[in-house]
Image (cartoon, rainbow, N blue to C red):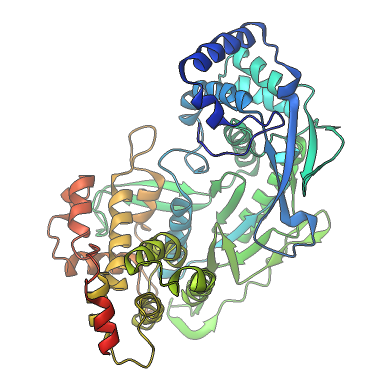
Length: 539
């Protein structure tokens, strides 16, 4: 259990239990053994303290823009962790590979990358692609518990463990804590608690069952790909296997991909029907449609430049409400656009990073008591992750890289105390601060992700879905004539490999430590020049 977490209604933290050492461990063992055998718990475990947490989006005056977080008793969380440890190993191998939420060695980057690569492949061959970003209203709070327990049994969880889970949710009551005041208690009959230890995996189990049922009822295949053994190079005679990708999940975040609008409508209507049966409701207001930008072709498959296909037939209605069609959508924190240009996402990253940097301007960057070395560490820990979130998937032009470099160097000048009017070159600035160039950092991030994906396998020991999409192609298909070719992600990676002079990347990527050592050559952080203040003063 992690330390320094908020306590529940008993005001006992995990830190207190850890400090008790051996005596507390023995007491907890005897106590948990008794609860395990009798399947009964104290009333304190059924009391939940709820606090509100702003989602960092939307009007703060609107209740829907807050998330209710459950503060549970420390002993209850430890017992829940014991149950979770017994469930997780059993369940993880049964979940669909398209689910990446709350699973080991998975992240939001997997889903963002897979989505972007699918869009890139379709756009390269000027093929249509229809997307739907589905939002579920109050997903965790709406789960039908009785159906959840039946689904858990269906996935092979023992009756004993299901009974213990039922016990944790039996007669659950909650009280709201706000500004030091506590409300009267009220009963909670539905949902899994946000903040509860087993809640994420329980929701994954239920949602996995729902998605399987939706896929069976909708009877659509999604986007068809081919996967061979020749990485980025494919010949017409290459041996290949076909695979389909229909949806991507990250917990309750769902994006559906189809080759036709008709298939997409089938899936959405099946999803609406099935989720209603399990107590979940699709939020029509937050659900969005998108079609990939596609150029018109003549009868000879020659592209008519400057003329886009207008998909006016995307008219999908749920509960007599039309689902909105958009040109861009923020998916897992990354802006996805139908033209696949990076400008909108880049502007958003720069705005957020600039805001984060300015928040520390007086507290850190301009405070003389904070050394330049400490400032740079804070910059690397707090600002760069905001700026470079999702950078592994970026395909940048020279102009876009220059925009990032300009912000990066401007931040370093502020940290080092260099005025904008000083005529200090960027090379000198990087030298005295010991920092690598942003171009090398971006290259490292891309290649690190490329190596990671090339090593990944699924639960069956076969190449992962992410790897298949990365090397995926459309067997036997040709690009339309006069199409031209936009810069692709694989072009950036192959150029990075060439610039680092990596000849045998197919072998090196399989060795994680060797690959990391190879790609980190130019991004080592050196010590700050001891005479940095005098150098800056001389300028």
